[in-house]
Length: 135
Image 1: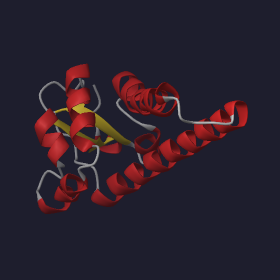
Image 2: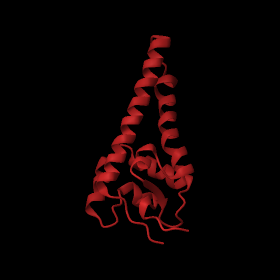
Image 3: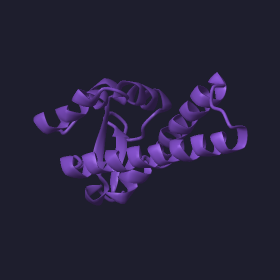
């Protein structure tokens, strides 16, 4: 099966949209927290719940649909290089190696398959859904 790799510009824009949504969710969460409690120094409230929000934003939509909101807007999908269907283990590796590793994202501009470092490590790729073959 042939899947056309995602266009670099679409991929970067989808990442920026996802980051914007996450930042909005964090701002909303901290605003509600400050409004209701008047403080944010509880470690569970300021660390674990936001981490849970971020993980849920990336894990559930990708496992169920292969897409985050940003990728859906640009008709991109995350798939396994081997089987097509991404596994939870691949997704966790991809998520872990993508956070705070911006030079790895820039790598998409310098290789033929448009793979980021976290794609290579997790054996995944981002494809253009419009080029997906019919089953």
